[in-house]
Length: 236
Image 1 (cartoon, one colour):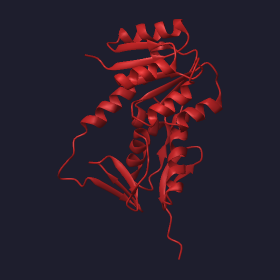
Image 2 (image 1 turned 180 degrees about the horizontal axis):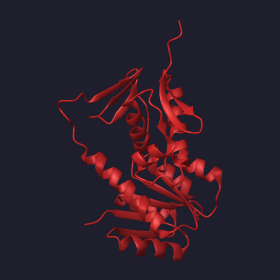
Image 3 (image 1 turned 60 degrees about the vertical axis):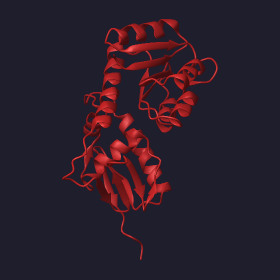
Image 4 (image 1 turned 120 degrees about the vertical axis):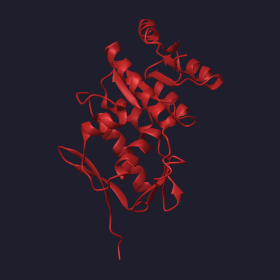
């Protein structure tokens, strides 16, 4: 059976279009008029992926996203009718995995859905190579492949799965400069012509969490190109 997907959007034509398009690709889809109805269904039977409109009657999509993220790492795609930078930043900051502004092409949404589910499947099936160390250590950060966690000086940091994948990927080669579009393609599986703001916001979120944890590792911006990890020297 195909993956299960929950959609919440108060516009019936949008719900029906998305549902029909995704079902034609083999997914099992349930559509809800409100985020509250979706949340109730998710608590009874979790889906594999969630698509949330931001502006809905009752609890808004951003709040539903936040509530879901507190319970699960399920991939979440946010939809909005407004091309609002604030909505975009809010959605990424509270843990959504992707963001689309209406109107959008159904094929674009399908590409995002396929990519997120493919990444989720790869993470769940990723083999552990016994001949290679499970851990990556950069500065005071340790990534445990077995536990799929990153800690700073032994204390866990609350990264989302997207943040973990991004940071652990960059920890493999600290100091290496990564282009924005390369990170987008590697982590999300998107083609390079897709917007790279999701990369910028994810790394901004990682940077903030590293700072709050007091880590010596920081994300440095390479203007006009991308990002790299650097380890600060201890203050004597």
